[in-house]
Length: 401
Image (cartoon, rainbow, N blue to C red; front, side, top):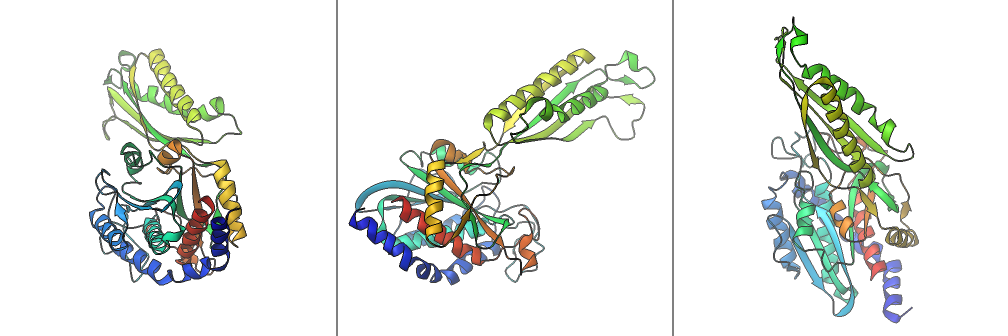
């Protein structure tokens, strides 16, 4: 082990927790500011402007050619090393806040109900930390403040398309996780979040009088057969040791009150999630095949449409194990947890480059309000989790450089 490496490990053991403590008030101040002033996906102009201003004040350069509201800060070290990227999402949700917090959203119908305010606060403080410890910087660090995680076309895909990852060696991010207790950090190797996609089947029949159904081609009964078949598809198609969730979420046909009219058309739609992109592709093909065959047998025609969201996300096994061991050495309770069926557009990053996605526990059993899951109007975190997340970023950075 070279001298510089030994010095970094010494810093990690003796000084890192004290360095994090110095940011406790700043983390809370940033987070509460963003919480009061939430902005919806692809509308994060005020948030982005403040972040760019803060990064400039830190002496961190801003990357050009990044689309719309996303903002990328860059620090280059004097010594060669890897290019590491740390990402925070910064968009809020169309949710009316019901927490009653003194720093609740000041914008009706908009709320940081998924913790992106905390993600942004932590990355800002991490950027500030490295701006004051440039002697620790080897290679290049990119700080990505990303727009539009919650909404298609997903800001993560734009970051990749804009070339931000082209020279990057590894990508890292974290997420608030109320399903984990405060102090617990997950850095599990392998699958972490599911792919997500939607489908719609538009059925064309021949409408008519309900007294003469044999003179019509009924899209409603055809649709009912399709719904029943799709709801059984997981059992027919997916290995029970794999994970997939398939739901029909709407069925539209006819007009309310028109009891004696068989309609011409019907529409069925739903959502598909899977921990592997291959399983998702297989299921989408089977849904289309079932719909077309059932419609053909019933004398209808149909149009099948598929829209993909973020792909399935996996942590790089080697990187995850490496940083998890480093976190444990630093006294952080890093453990393995099962993957979840939520989706995350950080998957666009990890599909292109090796990455680690951390889940940081935000539920304090002494504060029942922190048990509320994301996307709920009462979502609330224990703000101490941000200090843990900042420590996770610093420890991971020191381990990987």
